[in-house]
Each structure stands twice: as C-alpha cells, then as structure tokens.
Length: 97
Image (cartoon, rainbow, N blue to C red; front, side, top):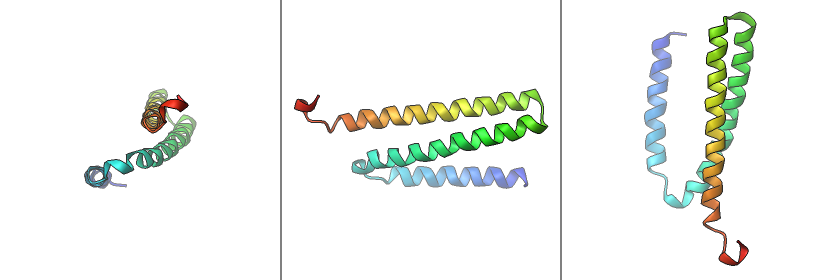
C-alpha cells in the first residue's frame, strides 16, 4: 500500500478522533475510557501478532521496534485502566471507603 495513503488515513483519523472526543459531554468520560481500554487491548494484540510475523522474516532492529510497540501499547492499557479506576472512585460514597 502506498505510504502516502497510510499517512492520509492517519491524519484524517487523528482529526476525526479529536473532534469526536472534544464533543463528548463530561458525564460520558468514564464509559468512553472503558471502551478505549478495550480498544487498547486490541492494539496490544495487534502489536504481538505483527512482532511475531516480523521475527519470522526480518532483522533484529525490526523486532526491537515491534517490542517498543508492545511496550507503548501496554503503557496505554495500564494508564487507561488506572485513570478509569481513579474516575470511578469519585463515585464511591464516603462510608464505603
């Protein structure tokens, strides 16, 4: 696939994502974060699959890049779940703490 098309898809999806997230009411942030955590899990799975395929046919440096992609995806998942947990703790009554 042409790299210019991939860059165009990336730019359009970034702008569209920004516009959509900007217009979400604050009441829906917690459910939105939960959905994004699920999508981040899919990103981790994709990074694993691509890295496995790279290891079969490519060089060591490509495997390093795949490993970095897995690490970044996992940081995204862990950070998303910790932020969601913190947001949900705001709704706990004081006698339940």
